[in-house]
Structures are given as C-alpha cells and as structure tokens.
Figure 1: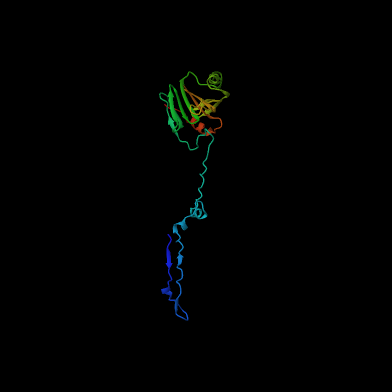
Figure 2: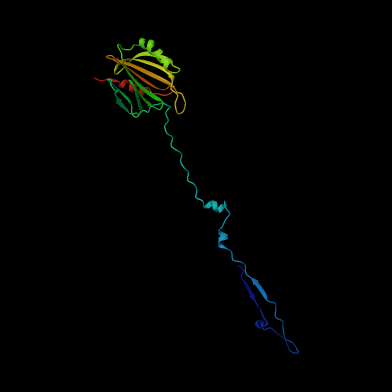
Length: 230
C-alpha cells in the first residue's frame, strides 16, 4: 500500500514578501512538492525461502546411523541343532522304545512310523522274523530291495556294529529324496539303516538327511536309545 503525503508550501506559510522601491510586490507561491514513502517490507516475504535452499536444508535434523542386524549362526541344510531335545516313543503294539527329536511331525502307516523335520527323516519299521539279520542276509536281500525302491541308490555298505540294545547290522547308502511338493527340488540323502532283533521281532531303524549335513551325534543318540521293553 502506497502512502502519499503532500506538503503544500503556500505563500501564507512562508510569508515571503518582496519590497520594491515603489510598493510591495508579493512573490508567486512555489509549486507543491510531493513526497512518496517507500512501501513497507512484508515480514512473510523475508521469511520465505525457495525449496531446497541452504537454510531449509540446515533446519532438517540429521539422520541417526542405524546399526545393521546382528549376524546369526547358520548351519548347513539338514544339520540337527546340538541343543535338540529328545522324547521317548513307543510304536503301538510293540515292545520297543526309541528316543526321537521333540517337535518333529509324525505319521504312521501300518507298522511303519515316520518322523520328519525339514530335510531329515526317521523311519521305524517293526516286523516278525524267525532269525536275526546278518551282514550276509542284509547284503543279499535288503540291498537289492532298496536298490529297486530308492531313486539313484548308490554306495551300499554293510557292517556289524554294537548299540545299547545289543549287536545290530548297519547298512549305509545314498539316494535321492522324494520331490518336494512345494519347491519341486530333490535332495541327495545319506542313509543309516540299523536292523535290531529280539525274540522273534525285527526292528529296522532308518535315519536319513542331506549328505552335506553333519548328524553323526544326533543319529548316534537315536540309534543308541532303542530299548526292548518287558
């Protein structure tokens, strides 16, 4: 807004009188002088600054450094944790007890009970038998049967070993797992198959997991846990 103030300097205000020799002569009044005041500066226009200016950037708080996630221990696929808990399990209608990892999924079909967790598997199969298995009988009968059943069966090895329940026959071999219904992938598995016998009952305990996994201790815990109940 422009404010205009006009100062009129008239003859009466100045009272300038020029005297001549013959009489009194009045000087003509000077022209009015107009003074224009400068417009006031808006405080809002002084405060505003273009976006991205140095003043706007300096007013933004500095971002605090965010620490990265703490690295966690990673085991190879199929490794059973060292702190895994075990619980005793007795298949229905049997006289045995076996410790299996707690929390694993269980399924039963006839005289075969299977426990699974991710890539690992435990199978307990009971059957009546007239004699105890031997390295010769497992080599001549069990190996060919498994070879026809397990995809890409390879590297069979049959030995006699001792466990808490007594002497057993151990068959180790490799083979492909079943196709994963979710991922469609196949895992190369290592198998340990322990054959126990007592009083006309045979138990085949098969433990399997990826060949890259280190489950020596967990598999020994399970195979050593088998007990014959009265």
